[in-house]
Image 1 (cartoon, helix red, strand yellow):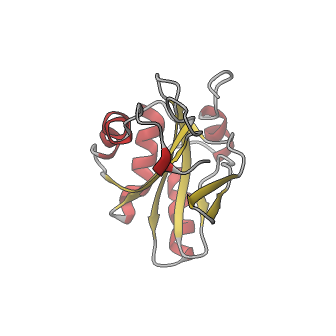
Image 2: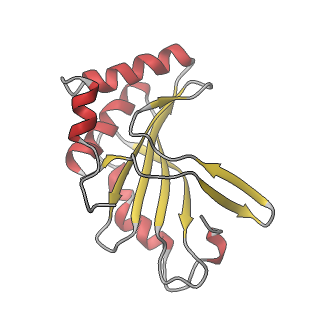
Length: 168
């Protein structure tokens, strides 16, 4: 991952987000864009990937919003990302870990799922959809509800929405 401040002038991040990310936030249940990182090599015409974090405002909206992206927006579970070192500023980096396809629960009560779609311009859109629950137990219950809403076991669901050969 590379510093977003030095992106090529030919790539307009705001216009790209308005076209490819903002429409995903608006249908019910709504999501709120939390943050964005761009993986773009210096002097490249466009990024390899855009990572967007979206949060559900309501706890009951997290699982349906993720389901909506999987079923209607052409996303799949992100099994394909390797850990990436992201430069936030000179001398300040963080590591973004790769996706394993499974929704996950953070120690702080965050339930999230990372989804992937290659956009028609060739840029990979990786979106994490989450909600900060009051505690880990509530987040675990939300992940269970995520799987239950599809009416099939988790292994079948993961197989159904795994990346298709050639899509990554």
